[in-house]
Length: 88
Image (cartoon, rainbow, N blue to C red; front, side):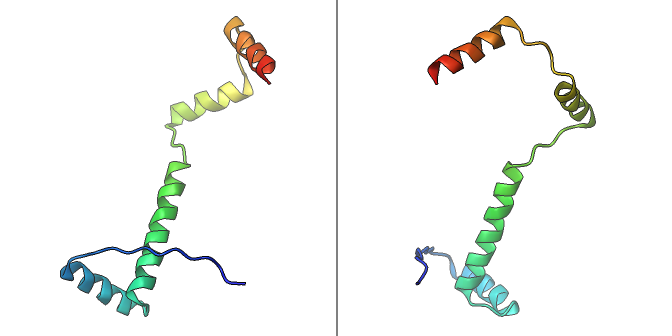
């Protein structure tokens, strides 16, 4: 069974192409392989970065304190839960 593949193409200046060609040669790959691998690594880094939440020391303390000692639900929260249950 063969995996489905998609085509990606880009037009670049000769200077950009020569730089990519040189870099690809240095790592022993074709320009296409180099582009795909580089783009994939960057895409994974962007996705990872978007999934990480950064907190200051004070923010982290407040966050964990709220988890360990949650406030008593107020009327607005109780109403929201009831509305949610009714919609399901």
